[in-house]
Image 1 (cartoon, rainbow, N blue to C red):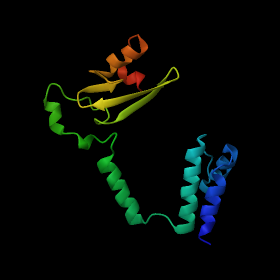
Image 2: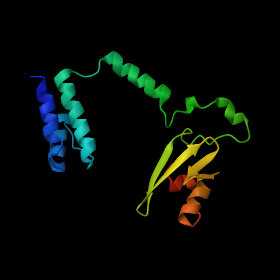
Image 3: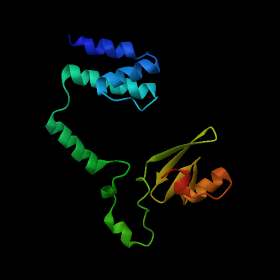
Image 4: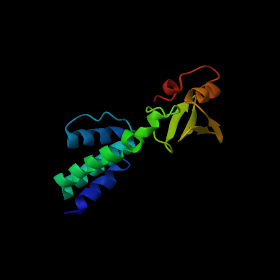
Length: 150
């Protein structure tokens, strides 16, 4: 009986988008807001396994939430030193932590910008600000935060 979930999951792997959206609605009781086949298939697979084998315990769910709050790799302000604000050259808190890669599609081209401790790396060149980088890419003045949707 335990192979039932795996059989259903594999049968849905190549299913058309409308079939995945219908199955998602059946399992979650609401319409699927996504048109991404891979995302829907993964969410359906998780839910089928959850129904077949049981979900995470309350203790595990609580611990997972604690870890997300503590170690969110993109937006966690607590990973940054509070003493940085005392220095005149502090990092803007709107920026993701160093090492994060910002991805943007611009005019059919995929741009990947790596966040550094002091600046940004794009095409093996270092830029001091996102605004300077956006201007280099577009040829006109842009707010770096607005261009990269930060």
